[in-house]
Amino acid sequence: MSLLDSLGWSAFVATLDPSSSLFADHVPARVAIEHKGRFEVLTEAGRLVVPAPTAPDTPPKVGDWVLLSPGDPPTVHTVLPRRRALIRSAPGGRGRQVLATHVDEVWILTSANRDFKVRRLERYLAATLAAEATPVVVLTKIDLAMDAMGRLVRAARDVAPGVDVHAVSTLLDLDVDTLQARLQPGRTVALVGSSGVGKSTLLNRLLGDEAAATGAIRDDDARGRHTTTHRHLHLVPGGRGAIVDMPGLRELGLADPAGLASAFADVEALAEACRFRDCAHDGEPGCAVQAAVDDGTLDAARLASWHKLHREAEAAARRDDVAKARAWARQIGARNRRILSAKKERGW
Image (cartoon, rainbow, N blue to C red):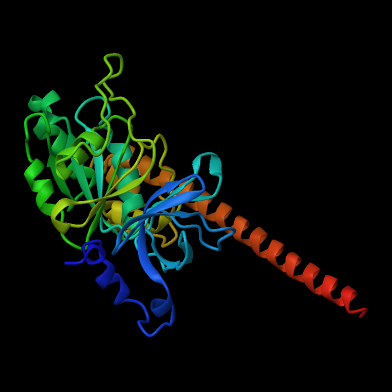
């Protein structure tokens, strides 16, 4: 299998128009690392460093498939259409941030200590489903809480029904082989989670190499030290796909409400029985969702999380609409200024 096919090129290119002249004149590559002012990309000939394109319509991101123009060095000519992009609302409401693209599975890592929070799992699950990727919950460092393993696994499954949950320990080599078996040719896995949950340690075990630095757990808050400083797409040995490692996320603001219906399928199913179709589940008469909370069928904290994430995602979508409208207005203004300048030069 070729290097690019091990990264999923054949399956991806099958969704495009193979008759395009771009494919005859340009070299396909996949973005592995984004540095300031340059990118590392993977091509059939190996790894290349290329300069960042100037004023691109779509800036390349880790995981993107791009076409390179010949040259020394080559340059990014085109970012090919994105699929399954993991996106968050940037901290401080500053637009949308693409974390990784063309992701097949997102492994949501949370350590089996004070980092474990079901509300955070719901947030990561919604973001993953919005990307149309397959979520997998990975409880790391389970050796720190062997007596609580069953309870933690059940808690994760309660908020992520139907999602595979793995309790792993790299120290005890527990269930790591099961995760290893999920790595397949042509598929890409992204590792996400808070700082110090063990992403780098797990990555090193899966790759069989010291691909990422690791840090010990801090005594004061039972959390690991932040070690990964940038997003990085790693090749899995044996041509078994790729893994995207990324820095720990302090925030994962939802940028799209699309994943909430699947992440909260139990709430959505109850809502079908509400008296009013536009019921907001916030005190309206005949609300089946609130009735389920009252009789203990639905956890009140889960409903509160559903409300919070909906408000957050809808606010992000509104900000995105405003940003798009402003960008469009700037483009129209720039075009009108160019037209006016051309008329003046011609004496019209």
